[in-house]
Length: 201
Length: 68
Image (cartoon, rainbow over all chains, first blue to last red):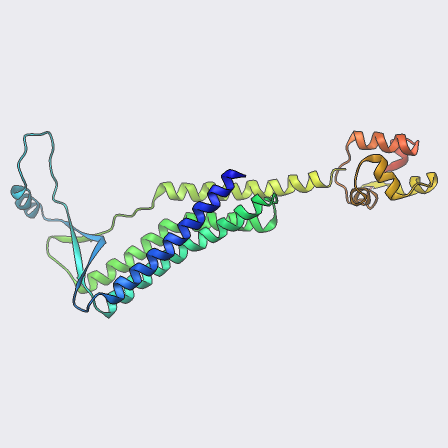
């Protein structure tokens, strides 16, 4: 039971942090003076021209150590305007909402487990829902990055530079999502076993 | 369900009430009701043994198989 209390606490704290972060980011985006620049970490620009890479590499500090520095990526800051604000806030609301939804479903599962009724129809649906949300999270992330990239590319193009995204989620998250779906099947089987146990006199 | 539980019949023959039988079996009345109404999915041998002892009968007096 202590484990579950700790997990509930972590879920609570995580939810608060997400909401707080969301509020802070919204406030920052809205209160940044028009025309000021805000850093954009993803997507980023990749240098496609080898000549340009060499030119930049030649300016980097030389070293006798066994290391090579690669000037491949360039980060950017974008000037705030209405479109940028809307894009940022919308993407952030989607991401935060997604995470809060998963946390809320998870919280309800933990509550039932604490009340010693883990195997029920609601929890089966909840586990399946979380499994699906986690499994498609990399796809959602890719979609959001693509939308952001298309918006930036529609406004800015540079020779020798290509807009790229480093996706944080990937195969591990997909596998995790599939694992959770399998757990959902296990919950279904658990419900049947529980029912049989309850109806064994 | 192909297995019919004739506990009611045997209880009537032995003139024993549900509450009394449940107490002697060490199960709740609710569980006894589940058994009597055929909703049970399984019965433990220990429970069957106890029923047969209390009602002085054979398992065949309590359980009957029919083709559905």
